[in-house]
Amino acid sequence: QVQLQESGPGLVRPSQTLSLTCTVSGVYISSGGYYWSWIRQHPGKGLEWIGYIQHSGTAYYNPSVNRRLTMSVDTSKNQFSLNLTSVTAADTAVYYCVRESPKKGRAFDVWGQGTMVTVSS
Amino acid sequence: ETVLTQSPGTLSLSPGERATLSCRASQSLTSSYVAWYQQRPGQAPRLLVSGTSNRATDIPDRFSGSGSGTDFTLTINRLEPEDFAVYYCQHFGGSPPWTFGQGTKVEIK
Image (cartoon, rainbow over all chains, first blue to last red; front, top):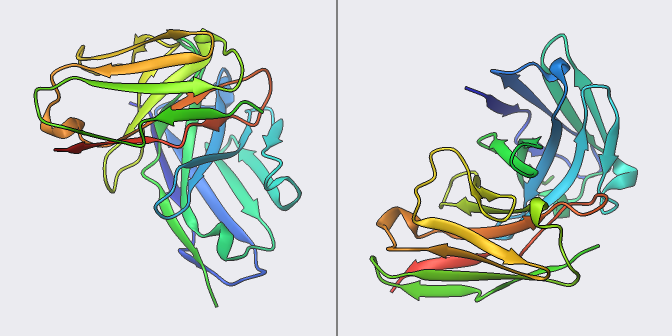
């Protein structure tokens, strides 16, 4: 059974860097074939895809956060990570790490439980 | 970037009734890349349907997806109490960013 688990601080100061890690179990990131994404949800709002990374390290970011976002992958730990710099209150959200699968059409088929991140001084 | 507009915003129904949720796109979509998700309060979203009409693992057959072009539909037959939730459509276009509809809330009437 594939599972994803987010970890990281729940509170980040404005202008600082938000760093989250997703630990994957049940499948090896290094096996390829999937995209590993971060999706966030502002309080009471809808879903926003912010970026993905592949096992090779190739990443693509949503232009809405492009200049502030860096994603990385550590296949030895079976983890991928997010670094979002210069955060503001607008980055307060629940952050989900998610697997994108190409099977039966593309879809986000496995989701982490989500982690709430608040940006506040 | 394709805009997905879901309607209605809120659907008030009773258990046992049928729910019909619409997702309309600003341009024609590739059917293989249209998915629907359910989000219950306090939970992460979960995949219901991929490729327009393929139910995900362990999803009951009262959920069905259909559509083509710019109009896609999620139908829930015989609503169960656990089906009252928010539903999102989503599309993978030719290139990122991937987009979601704004959601339809199915609430108990």
